[in-house]
Image (cartoon, rainbow, N blue to C red):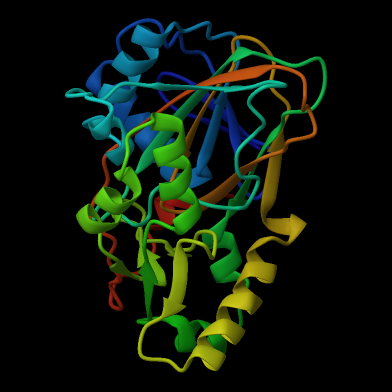
Length: 296
């Protein structure tokens, strides 16, 4: 199904994801086109663009049209004063990082809202990226289970492996302890309301970060989270993208999980990523989804 906007077309490719055509993202976006892209993103959750050979500055300029760029906590300790993009390189000397389903830095009080990723170097095979729709996963639950989950809070904190890796790679003694002190655990709703679409989604990430459900015994918390981990990882909620040069993906961090597939190792792959700031996650029990954002 193709949805036609004034400035572009968005062709749906699954339960989430749409390929956008008709735009040159190297050119400045006017407000009307930006607003249409925001609508398309809230509808499809991941937007894919082909034949968009953006350089780093152009990608940052594009991202800034959607909000302030995120300055990641680790960047502050490298001396960065202004947010930019991260170039992540996998090769024989630098194996891929996590391949767990996650959304980024949920241990911040106001986690990122939107991510932008382009490929700099593409391996001969492998290295795909996958996304899962946590809104579709929520909607697939029975009404009784949704009622159980609505209003629950989950605790998120920067996990041990992250802070230890950050200290090792940075070479900054004591960085792990500084990160733990600077970013105490936060609580976010397990089910969050999207600020534009009103759609509800499971707000989850990997269990190294999202430790427990608040005010529940550990046995009950673990049972619920184990079930949800399996549920959101079902293929019916996923899209998988095989990268080609000149492609860009924009996704909603609030309604998706993502993971990199590490089957390209030890081939070299380089990607360029940046994110824009988001709002404090919230759950509004009285708000209903706006039908203009329906996927069909």
